[in-house]
Image 1: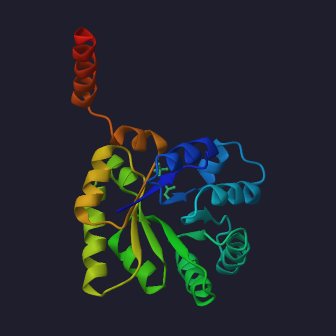
Image 2: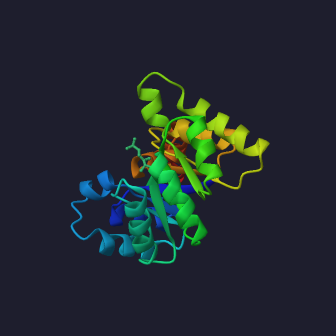
Length: 214
Ligand code: E4P
């Protein structure tokens, strides 16, 4: 499973990339706003320079022509830009247009398996089901990921599933068990993946025991 970081924070991306297992980055307008970014294009270029993997950059237009135009502009920022389009009917039409021009699309804000099926039929390179937001309204986010993977397998779609809106390491575990292609995580979740109290306790004991021996 590929690990993406879900942030627009350059320091977080740099640190995560330093651990050696970062495969890509996803951003969205809220994440860019959180970093108080004024020049979004410049910021996306800076992110792209930090990782050779795909970097999702989202359009702000909501009509098909506007999304296609913005997508073309974003795709020119760097060779690893993936254009993020909302899963709406105009977004699906824009996806088909960009796909025909060889531009990779990440269909975002996906909350149902039918939306994911439409994204695949429209040629999206990635689809992003938001598991955390679904869990928060009392539905089963990871159940949706399993449905999407089963449907894609039935019809041999090449669209990769990015498990998004991840809230904790168990989402990452469930994503890997389900066979999701990618999991995109906030830095806070990435930092928790290697943590275990018994590892800390064991390490402290080893160091103390060796210290007593000295
Ligand atoms: C995915 O690409 C999105 O940026 C992201 O996972 C949104 O999740 P949120 O629910 O934490 O805003």
